[in-house]
Image (cartoon, rainbow, N blue to C red; front, side, top):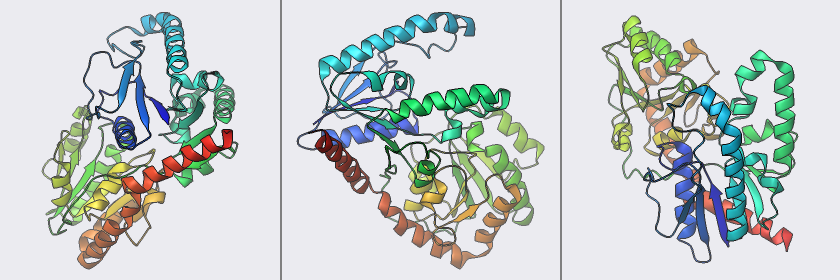
Length: 380
């Protein structure tokens, strides 16, 4: 079976890049699978996550999003030519490669991939919640309801023409009642913790990019309430991105000694094991891999019930705690609850470590292979 994944690039240290690389590596290691990752903006840069030598990698060499230093005007003026070049090279590659299945990450190729007559079945793999997708973003909804409705209908009509659209959560699938060609396959969790966190350190952890989506500004406000009751506990944030604005907020809140920001670390498992509580303060997620990572280390999570992911991952009160999305006081209250109740914290940590096993790579990838066989079988 010949599988082609498309993703713009593989040099970024992002969740999408990690997941696609991992899936391709896994399938390429199995007998009977020939796997290719098609990119368009990789150029000569190295892949951030190791790519198996069994995985074919081909780059179209059409740079649309980069370099960032180009002016907005130049991007607008050159976009039509670049897009046409991208479409032609993408189409030619599929016609020449003749894959059985082409998997789209629903970027620019979403505009035309369902129309191609290259012989492959088309699967769309959605990694972000509906209202956060670029064409359906809150900025457009806020500025013009008519434009939003037009773009939404147009996007939905494109998705309807795929052979299958795969969502990461059941919650997300429910947000697309117009689609009758959808399935749900969760992201897998491959972090292996041989031991479980002791949960004795007075240390809370959060992990993610320093970006609006991750809600670290909300977490700082919540931590101020926690620190007033438990000044001997500390919160540690790990991730990449610009921390300046968040650092100013931390300083203004008087939390410089108890809320500490760190850069991205290659030893994140150790950081989980040093912690007693994990917090996810995101405004939205596609899935929330960091939740499953922390839980695999036996660290109980406290999370906003944001769209989407946490509700599929956490059973509230059993292996973690869910808080109404954006409820800063509620987030602080639940963190304090686990701080003040060590026995419950330990029990939730044990439950979390057990429940997250359902997201093991073998379990998730078997669902993907079943889907491939099902689609191929229907067309024969």
